[in-house]
Image 1 (tube, rainbow, N blue to C red):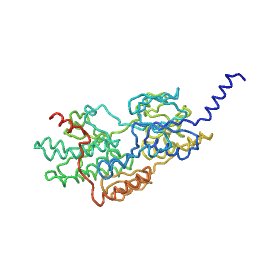
Image 2: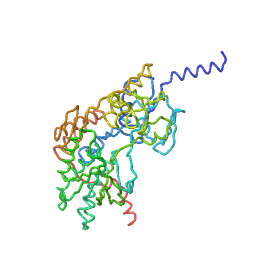
Image 3: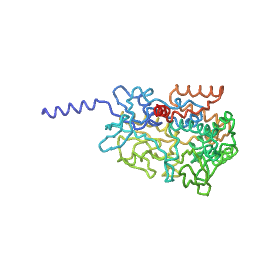
Image 4: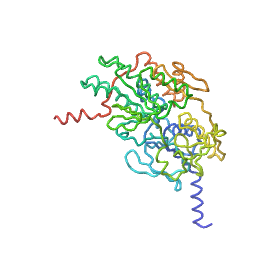
Length: 453
């Protein structure tokens, strides 16, 4: 054997003995749960796991409305990646591009430098972003409701509008400050609306010149109903309950413009609002569209029922960014794909972990199949709707089901315990309703003092 051939054989032998490089893009439901499963079940030196996300934590989004309303401490609805994934490498960075042909991913690290990562196995778990529409003024006036930062901002913002309204002498400005608008009638929009409205009405007891009747909450939904994830009767019940609370509900209505906070609806309604929350749908992370991976017509990565990216060996995808065939519905609709919700994301992550381990150990992956168990939604303190296993519930019972279900799905015992304690303390001492608006501009006072010096 020649020296060259001998060196090559030694190199290949050494390469085979190295652990498989698993790269997970995204630290949300799919990314965190997949990494947790892998670090528990991988054998020594079987594979290395790297997870990339621009945030150092996973956010449990179903609890964002309660965090925004002060029922839960915001830090308790996020799971620190480094604390939970001690056997994985966590990289705080934003994914810029994916090139599977060269098996490389380009990321921009937290300090701004560009880095290229190589992999043997790739997991696409980039999730979704807010779906913006070409509405004049939306980018300047609207705010989404997908991150813990947005939840904290909205809590402080709503309460600070009440502070300003209590001190202004301008009746038109006061009316604008006390008008809060939510656009989008899905789970995110309805729960954010209900919890924040509950909080604002509760806060009125601390303002001598603001009554609950002074506060105006408006919901705008383009479809003819809200909460499409539950049966239509529960959607109608929710509208009825919201209207009983004085919330204005506009169905089958689109927003034409919101420039400078002046909303114009397509039915001719016009009003001013200093708070516009945009929850009108989501779309797959835009990085996917610029990659060399196959795309579904929805804009998501085309995946098989086994959660493998179609035609790309060694690449997996799940969650909001993946178009996974919904085997529970394909008999009626062969083109059905799993909806982008937390229920599927968590279950797909657990299944994905098993399939990756199967392929690493020379076995065939299995198809993912899950029938929708139902949905639960909170409508504020002690109020909710639920449609679970074809059983519907309303009011306190549904609200309790919402809390029990979601705390059971919260990652780590530590967070489960902290959230439960938050609820117990909230029941004993009531929620704190105070604005910490300085968080949004912490250097304002320092800059003002420096100018006066």
